[in-house]
Length: 261
Image (cartoon, rainbow, N blue to C red; front, side):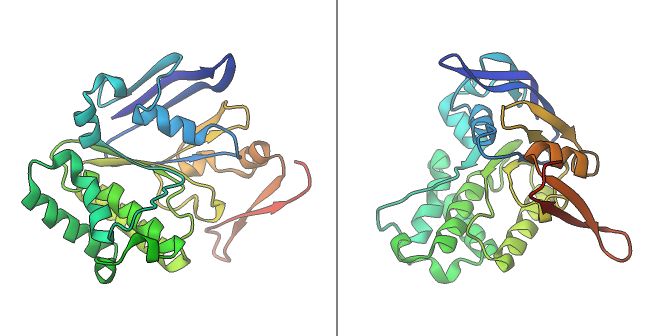
C-alpha cells in the first residue's frame, strides 16, 4: 500500500528528510513522531503528492502519488492538515460534504455518506450550524469528519493522512475518534498515517511507528513495542524519558525529566 525506500527531500540545498524507509500494509495505522521541525508534516505532504522526493522512491498503491491523475488521487488519498482555516459561514453539513467533491457525479450517495459520517462523529446536532459559531475543538471534529468522508465506503484501497488529529479535542472526543478510526480500519479498505505527539497514547491503536529526529533522519521504524523505548525516546527528544507501568506490569506510558539523557 505505502512504501518509502531511502526517501530524502532537499529544499534550496537544505536537507529536510534523509533516508526514510518504511512500509505500511492495508488496514494498518502508522504513527509518525518526533520533535518540532523534524519534517513530520513535510513527510505527509510527500505521501499526499503535494511535493516530490528528491532522492529515493515513494509509492502509494504501487506508483508515485503524482503519477495519479488529480481526480483519482483525490478519490484515494484524503488529508487533514495541521491547521484548517475556514473564514466563510459554511454549515457543518456543507463542510463535511466537501469530502465528497471528487465523487460529485453521485450526489445521492454523497448525501447518504455525509449523514453516516455526521452520525459517526456525533455531529448531527451541529449539521446546520455555521462553522464560524463553533469552538476550536468542534471545528477540529468537523474537519476530521470531512477527511474521513472522502475515503468513506471507498471501493478501492484508500489512504487517510492526519496531521495531529487529536489537537484541540478533549479526552472524551479523543476516545471517540480512536474508536472510530479503529472501526474504519476494520471495515474499510483503508490505511492511516497520523502525525502524533502524545507519548501517553502512543502505544495504543498504532500498528507501526516511525521516529524522525530534529535533523530529519529516521531514528527507528517498527512496531510500537520495538520502537517506543525509553532509550529511543530519550535520544529523540534530548531529555531523560522513562517507561511507566501499572502494578500488573502492563505499559502505562512514559515520564520525562528535563535532565539530558
